[in-house]
Image (tube, rainbow, N blue to C red; front, top):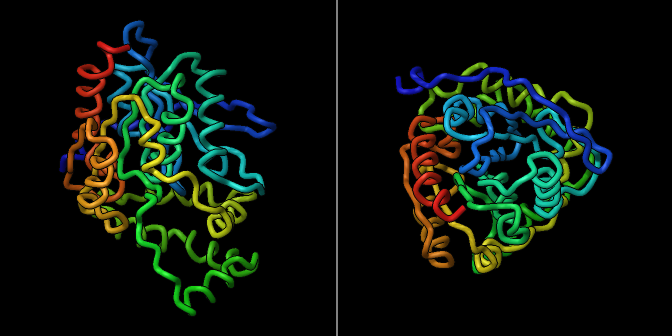
Length: 297
């Protein structure tokens, strides 16, 4: 299998940074490159720095690589507060300023992609380029269908703390985590015991259920098309074209509509191409940064 040839860092030594009274976990690998900007990796919902282990192991050979656990996820604190793209944008902005100390190339998957887009568009001085992998976030012209009576009822139920807590307890069972991953990964062999454990472990932390519940309460953030109209940096889109949660071709067309100067590739993978086809993703990231970002940096 292709994955077997990809060295994986199972436990990169990590550090903690204090942000607004909360402990934030991050890892750093590789050495500072005078002519190359650092690379900051941002995970998706329910994931953590562990999800980038196959990417860090290779990309650290060419770049100063950082990965961070967003507030509410991984080994970072999980306070009972409202979560939003703006919150994570501000966390990333301050992390780049206070810890990394220079503008970075941002790479984000799913929810992490949306947070990275918010930062690159609204805090331009903190970024030199943006890489989005099956990025989340709403467009303004996405058809909004009126929810059915059943959907309205389910939403009202899930807004109740007891209901969201029970759903969280059900969803976080290792067996159910594995089932969900197998739905969104094209290559079933990539769903390993380590991957399941990396997602299950943070769900045992105090406050994890509150973070899960916040999903049903948080209003939608700034629309993707509005953010793209504010963006001035080079943009690389990497799509796992077999993602059952995202119609990659359709969504890619929307990004091109609002940001035609982007570069994009479609890969035979699901929602997390960086973990499923890491060699391809690492090669594309490396080439794009060296060809597109370095001359402009």
